[in-house]
Image 1 (cartoon, protein in one colour):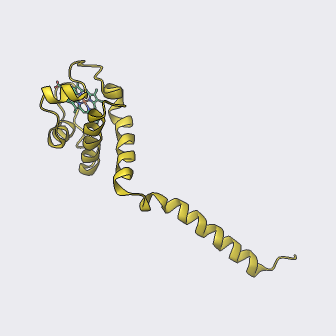
Image 2 (image 1 turned 90 degrees about the horizontal axis):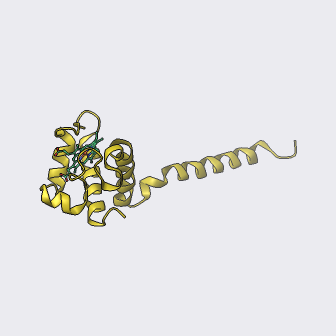
Image 3 (image 1 turned 180 degrees about the horizontal axis):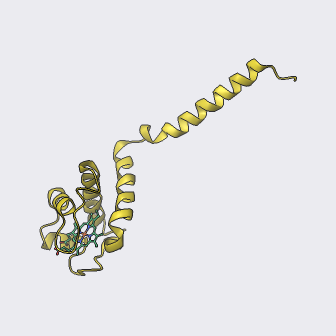
Length: 119
Ligand code: HEC
């Protein structure tokens, strides 16, 4: 073999280092944008079934658009956190499915999306 072991090991270590850096990338990304991406995923998995693009397929009026949120006093992190945690009528509670942090993040996401008209 022409390549010596020493060289190969250095190469492997360098490759591993690159790999580790790529894996760790999200940790270095700004926390807010990171949370938002996670919240978007949480919404997609748990909420979009009924609230696709801020709609409400069960009770059409009670959607996640800013006007409806204001009308039903759901236009705050506290109110959204409360309904997601404990549920209401046909919407189930998420306190056993999501952590408090996840609920907080998804509430922030809903409010932000509503303020941006779900674009
Ligand atoms: C099974 C369908 C369903 C799923 C899944 C669901 N919801 Fe709902 N959601 C509803 C219904 C029905 C209401 C209306 C409740 C009421 O006031 O009677 C509602 C109401 C709301 C409201 C208040 C809207 C308003 O205008 O008053 C918010 C905010 C909300 N949901 C957020 C979420 C979030 C965030 C998730 C995911 C964690 C979620 N929902 C998952 C059915 C669902």
